[in-house]
Length: 282
Image: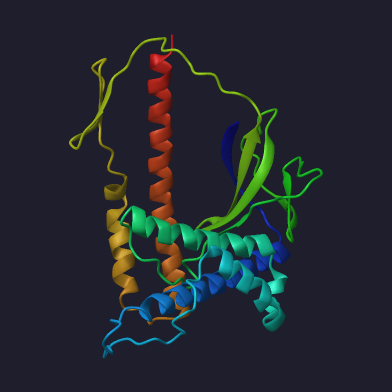
């Protein structure tokens, strides 16, 4: 089984933009509620059994089970009768939000990562459609998504033959909306025997890459080239009132500048790896 993920620039209609923003808002509310429920359960069990704590107490019943992924999904289904707004969003997309929260808690315990945080309207930037249904999903430069319908995108590269679209993720970035398509092909990938020209690569601090063929690549300073402009915008942001339109507009400028730096760095990495692979090929 071979899996790939292709990212395309999306061109949604105004109605689709409204649907995407509404979905992001509901997903953020589900994330914050589920995280609050887990934090309350953990805080209620911080005090000792034989003594009363001055900082925490049992705010929920002592026999209440831990709100894990399965239980919170069942609670989400029941909550749709009390909160009809939850029914306006794809059910599987909301379940994926709880699944991401579950993965964050697993990473916190196993990998020592930080405690999951609450999200404001700027921090929830993506949601997933884990199943796209049957039938024709691709038509030219359009992909059919639940609730959104046919979504146009910039077809920067063709989808390889034999691959099927299994999942789709909508991502909101500073430069617009993007759609990430998860592709799957039912093929067996054989183990490739070592062949061609061997190339040793060493990553360093002063130099970015040094190869066994004598190629030394300097570390690029993409941030330094735009650091002056970034510093100026961040200094102006300090004097903006929180929640104002001017602060929101300036935040978007800073985000676009950060994305420009990230895209430039990523493009350089891909070009460098492609050139090294071409060198090692027979």
